[in-house]
Figure 1 (cartoon, rainbow, N blue to C red):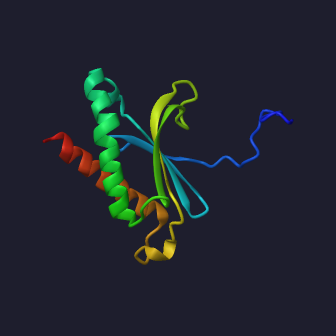
Figure 2: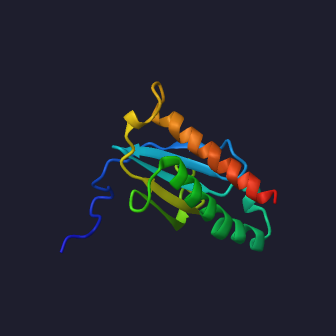
Figure 3: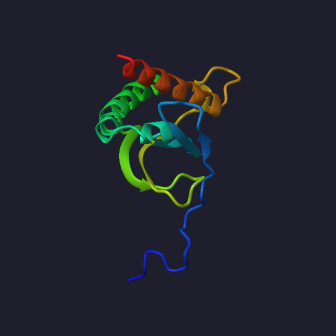
Length: 142
């Protein structure tokens, strides 16, 4: 039996992540691999500082509810083309020291020709993130 990791490297190419810290309701990093988009959503430092009960409700109830609703609506896909999971102890691509819980999401087989002419994949992702942020802001103000 071969060990899972025998030379300190993985047999896959590392993908560069784009970090977005523009929102108050989450920070996110995402990358493209072929036609798939991979996201890691993190709590912002402001949200990390909330009382544990508030933070847990937000991260385990409010955030995944909004993520599910907005992702399905925005991309027009259902499971299995969109999948999400809460992952414990993820390192942000810009921080090799402080693991955090992260919502991981994959949107599979995005097709560039489904976007308006002139749009890039980054434009599309930016609009999705903006809608998610607005939904979370709206739900937290109720």
